[in-house]
Every structure is written in C-alpha cells, then in structure tokens.
Image 1 (cartoon, rainbow, N blue to C red):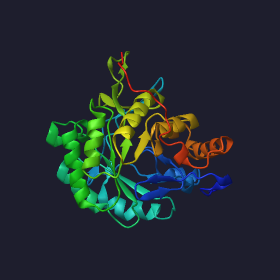
Image 2: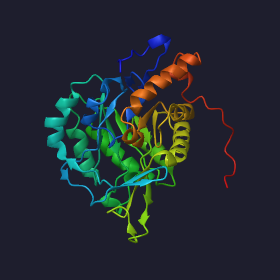
Image 3: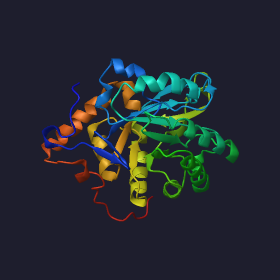
Length: 316
C-alpha cells in the first residue's frame, strides 16, 4: 500500500496524543503486532507501532492451550511471555528503528518497584512513548490488577512518572466497577493518555472433557463481543478526563473506528481483527480517509467527541 500523506485529498488524518502527533489514528493493540507483519504490508502506513508487552526478565507464559475461539471473538491466556529487557534493547529496538512510525513500548510488571525500574530502562532513544499495561496482577494487592482500584492506579502511575520523561500511557482494565475513578487517578498521577481498555476476564468449558478450554482456566476475552463495553468505557473516560483517550476493544470495521472517535477517543487500537485479516489496519486507514472525503470532513477534530447524547438515566 502506498504511504499516503496526512493531507491526501485535503483530508487531515493526523491524531494528536499529548505532545505526539501521529499521521493517522490507527495503531495496533499490544500483543497483536509483530515483526512478521512487515512481510504482509507497509507498516509505516500506521499511525504508530505498539509492541507486545515486555517484562524485565524472561517469562515463558501460561500453560497451553492458551487461546480458544468464541462465537464473536476469542479468549486468550498467553501470560505475557517475554524475552526480557536485554533482548528488547539489543534485538527489537534496532529492528523497529528502521521504520518511520513512532514506537510505543508496552511494559508490565507484578510490583510497583518492578514497574518503575522497567520504565526507566526502556526510556531509550527511538522510543516515542511508554504504554503501561496496568491491567496485570499486582502481587502487592493480593493479585488484583493495578487498574482495578483508583489507589493502586495512582500509586503505580506516580512511580512510573518519576522514572521517565517519555509520554506515558496507562492501559486500563474493563474488569473494574470504577472505570471513571481509575481514569481520573491515572490522570492525576501524571499519565499523558489512557488506553481504554484491555480484555474482559472470561472462561470457556469443553463439555466433552468437562475441563476449561484454557490451560489457565480463565483468560482475556477480545473481539467484536466486547466492543459495546469498551465503547461505553471510552465515552465515560473521555468525558471525565482532560488527557487523550485511545479506544481499544472489538474494533474491526470503519464504522467501529468512527464510533470510538465520535465517543471521544483521539485514536484507536486494533487487536483481534488483525488475527483474522493481517492487513485490516491498512484497510481501515484508507476507508476512514475515503469516508472523510465523501462527507466533506477535513480534520479528525470534526469527528472526535462529536457525540450528541442526553444525560444518562436509570439503566436496567
């Protein structure tokens, strides 16, 4: 695919996330993007490159089976396998340095100290931003994810902010009853943007074997089925905070992208859809541009947050 300029046909596709400006609002979700896709399409058409989450040391991941299909999505319990910080620095970073699109590094850890240490270690030349996956279990909070509660969210983002001057994105979890409070805590602690949201905790059973279909019993649900939840959270968080929100969850079509932008997202991440169609992100960029031309929309600013919605009443 041709590397289209931002102002093709007079349309400004650029997306601003804090101090960063991306050529368009389409980027991969962490864990769904790898070097192999460079053999499939020109990765520089993307607004940014978001790498698979890395941890400080090596990690094998969860027992198999790690993935199972659902009617409208998938469950995964990969377990964040990682080759460690040295591999990232010596092998991954040089590879991605060959591309023009900004590089976003996703990191995760199981304690406040580990998170802070890793943020400092990945703050290297060639890294445009850090995405902190605070949806993982925190061993200092009985295994609950950092982003489950406002207090642990505030503490981990504060610790991360102290260790890096790079733009810091906090990736939130849908597995909380306090999404707005968590979003506000991340903003107050110094996050430059929010990624809303990670996978929804789920489970599937093989009725023949009467066993869970995942080796880890439970896993993260992704795909079209979770889109209404992710869209609702994106709308809620975008209304509550002043920092940009990046929508993520079940996005696979142009209309999905537009819904998230209209709800208040400044950009979106594409995950499960890439497994089904490796070139989907490139196609969505073209389709978004064509829609803007068709509707005489010159800039994404005319779309982002343009929703007209009444006050929320009783939900039953």
